[in-house]
Image 1 (tube, rainbow, N blue to C red):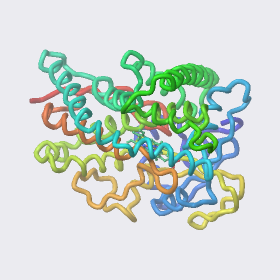
Image 2: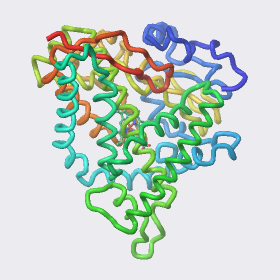
Image 3: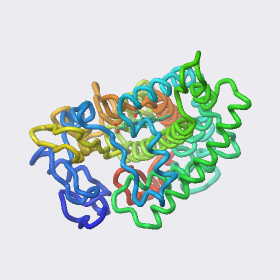
Image 4: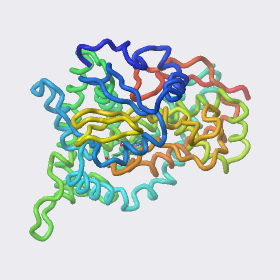
Length: 413
Ligand code: HEM
């Protein structure tokens, strides 16, 4: 974001009041028009889409692609750029089709199902420890650090086969890298993102080399390494850099959003005692409650696309080369699709939220995230039914990835 007044435009992504609750702003904007131009986002500004139909159309439109442009100056960001040049999320067909088939294949090999009981036990153990600390007299415990973060980090690390001793490295690297997706990041933040990328790439190169020499069973890195081998004389299907890029993407995408859905969602539930009591009383409501957590306070608020030809979105022309962004949090509160959209309703059905996206980049990890979130919510409702928010949580100053610094919970029972 250079040369723009961030305050200009329909909303300010750095404004604490907006970040505290962006939804009334989205409602007011959506009532005016489905699409607005925001001059303060990106190098040249971009259109933002607020309706469910408009966002869905953007995500499915083949004339709007995820077109990666290296961060400049490129010599300052070699590792960050490499990770994104090789990323499934940043590619379009035919590269995307090839990468997605290989990654989906590795995912589909029963790994998620294999982990389901293990994930249940992990969530139970972490929530039991949290409950014990409360029982031992701690006035409150940070749910984010105690449960919401470790569940997805442990799970994605287990799935890929990252050794236990190294898992603590993942979240700090990932947190530093994803700050680059925010608007208006300062120079120190940009440097930190590159340093984390360098360390992450070096670490994965080593791990991939180890798996090549000593393949393992039940390990997704081994599966991805196998996908680099020449098969019956065909050229490599996945390059070495693509394996590293894919592993890093999975390790990051595998927890960033899930952590924040768990914490944003639990906060929203605990703040609404009636809804919370419904979930406590009836375990059958857990899957629906998780869908509502995904909808109600989306952890991923904005995704960009670039027009590869002139495209019309809800009556607005996006010229070739210009950007447009979907505001998923706004789409998920669109009254044209959701009755009483600002009410958290754990019995809402159907619930066609766009939290996992749509179209060719539709989230590959949705089934896994659902297993994790359901296990976590179920553990909290069983083991800490009297959970209460102990102090108003401090919200992260970021818009694109919406989350909390901590969520202190206590128990009134
Ligand atoms: C609640 C948690 C999650 C949310 C809300 C979420 C959301 C999303 C969204 C919205 C997209 C599409 C982005 C776009 O269209 O530009 C996406 C893509 C993706 N997600 Fe997730 N995700 C979650 C969890 C996960 C997990 C656990 C994994 C992996 C283990 C994962 C892996 C991916 C991958 C690989 C893609 C790229 C797919 C492609 O480009 O074809 N996600 N996710």
